[in-house]
Length: 311
Image (cartoon, rainbow, N blue to C red; front, side, top):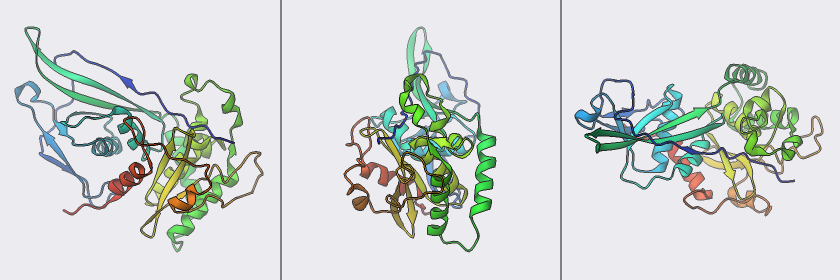
């Protein structure tokens, strides 16, 4: 049975204000991520100031949708949900969202707008801002349960493969696929818990994106490199994870078929190469476009996001 993936709506917000009230900060030409970080270790993001019009605002200069998505994620990790930026590239907000979704373990949406400086009714300068609006209502509860799961499953002498196997098996054993969601008008239930790690870990019921986000959250806590793969063409989500330098796929949802049988764990879709994973002719990636990501887009982004840049 096909599993449903919620694609959150992106909203576009235009601003005609003279200056968006960003907080002032000491200007530094670059922001370099510490080499000890799991995501974007050693990556450097370029900062610029745009003259007297924006003297209190530090902008980022970005060259691609991948870079903007990674920049948004690192700002979100640091507690900043809104950034101003400039770019000469043709940036697709939808593709930025899809790249960012690979790394986010909570549901979210993006808003983008224009910052303008006007004098005598004439626009003198304009830049862009982008904002993450994440659903963090259950963060404390879901992290408490996630930590308890890690404590109960993982030991120090486990290999990465054994840790991934333990997480996968726990999700399949403890979660029941939420069939009721299939009857809902999803456009009216964008905040349904079954699409979140909270639904999967705390409520023990979820759809594919809930399984995938729960897996990502748990692997992050173990410093294991992983991401979420989404396909609009089959309305489904699964995971990609790095094992001994190789990126492999797993689908905890399809390893937990309907009807749910407590304690049953399948390994049909567990740690497979892309070629083998797609050989079932059921899983399909989207074709790359302005609004979609294909297999190469997904894999190139996880490699980019987790790669260690030289100092």
